[in-house]
Each structure stands twice: as structure tokens, then as C-alpha cells.
Length: 315
Image (cartoon, rainbow, N blue to C red; front, side, top):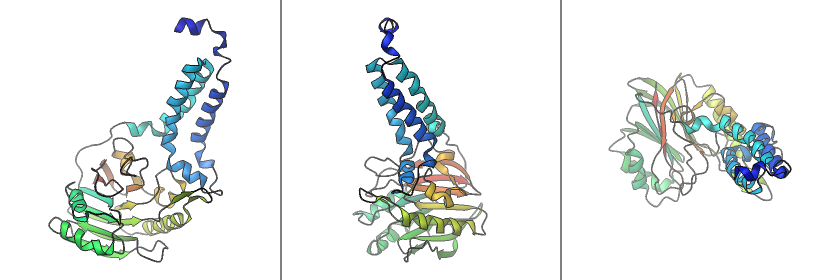
């Protein structure tokens, strides 16, 4: 095969279009923050699925080999290096041992047909603190019953709830500018100290042909949530919930600029959580401030369309 390539003068002339595609792919990843949100929130949409742009690298590689184009293959090194620079760190196992507190969060899905089973599965993770989102009012008693034997303290506010093995105080709603309750906070007093725990379910986003990425309401709620967390007087803060956005999405800057993702700091892999049938994005988040992540992982699938996620942290 090498002899065929060596004697083929056309390997430098063929594949110019493939080389251009490779360069454009690299530029898209490098300058994703410059893609404007003015038209259909295209920037946020790109950033939501940014890691998946790496799928085009092996596709272009195969095309370059089929075309026997040295130009295309050399150009392909550019997006490959860029992708590894952006996401290569997530491919390594950064989980560690120890820690003081295990937390978990799960969007249980309002149409969940097995709330008790879902609650038990999450409790089996060994979490000391559990946040649940998208709680349907008539299903709340089932979740409370299933978790009562493990978690002595709990509070449900609107469609979100928090269960804890340790005492909870200063529990209150958090206004994220929706007109109804989808966020709360509580101070959890653990043996290692106090931690302010926020539970949030930001508004859903949709991709529509006539409107693009409809995320404006989510973006406004993210700003409000960021303001609330920034003003919290407790030094250690943990945010649990379905943010309907990834850490790459600039629209969540009010939150992500002041908090760390446990998956990015102490996980193994991307930790995609949605949709449960074929996870493509990590829109469920465990984020911390003034707390050291030790490990982070996804839990087995429940009757929900999201995967539960968990993390262990050191206060």
C-alpha cells in the first residue's frame, strides 16, 4: 500500500475539499464561543453537542484513506489535536478515594411509571443527600415513602425535592424567574461541616426548524440561579439538578463561572446523562464551590428518560 502511495503524484492534489472540511471543523471547535446566539441560539446549540464534533474526525479519516489523499490526512491532524486539547482530559480516569459526602441527583420524569422503584435505585447509590427533579404532585407521596427509611430529613418545594441523612435548615425556595417553584436551597449540617445545597430544574429547551434553539427562558433562569448562588453566605456550596445545558454552553456562564463540575474534575469519561436510551449530553449536573470533588459517576438507568448521577466530595 505504501508503495502505491509513494508512486502516486496525485496524493497531494486529491482531497482538497476534505482538507478544507478538516480545517473548518477545527475552526468551529476553536472559535465555538464566537458563533452568535442572535440567530436561533446557534452558539448554545453547537456548544451543547460540542464533543460530538469529534465524530467527524474518523469519518474524514476514512474518506482521506479512500481518496488516497496525503493533503487531507495531514490537514486532519488539526481538528484531531484541537479535539484532544478540549476534551482529552475527560477520557482519563480522575476518580479518587476518600471524601466526606456522597450526593446524587435525578430528573425522575413527571411521567415515571415506577416512582418507588426509581427512588429505591437512587438510594442504593449510598448517597447521603439526594435531589429529585420533575416531581409530579400526586407522585410525591410515593417518593417520600420509598426514601423515608434511608433519609430522615427532606423537603419538597414545587417540582423539586431534597432528601438528606443529615439535618437540614434554612430551607427555602429560589426564585429563578418562572412564576412557579423549580429551585430550592437548604443548609445541610454534615459531620464535616455545613454545606449549602441547591436543587434546580431549569426550563426545557427545544430545537425547532422555525425558531432554532429555544433556550431564552432557560438562560434567564440560569442568570437568576447564578445570582442566588453568588450571594449565598455559606462557604461550601453544592448545586444538584437538571440544568438543561452543558458546561460548554455559554448561556450558563452565571453558574459555571463560579462553580466546578464534579465530572470534569473527578470523573471518568463524559458522564452523559440524557437521553437515558442513548446518552448524548450531560445536562444533569453536580457542581461545587468551596468543595473538593473526589469522584463522579452515572448511576444505572431507572424508569426515567434521564440517568441519575452521583459524586463524592470532600468538604
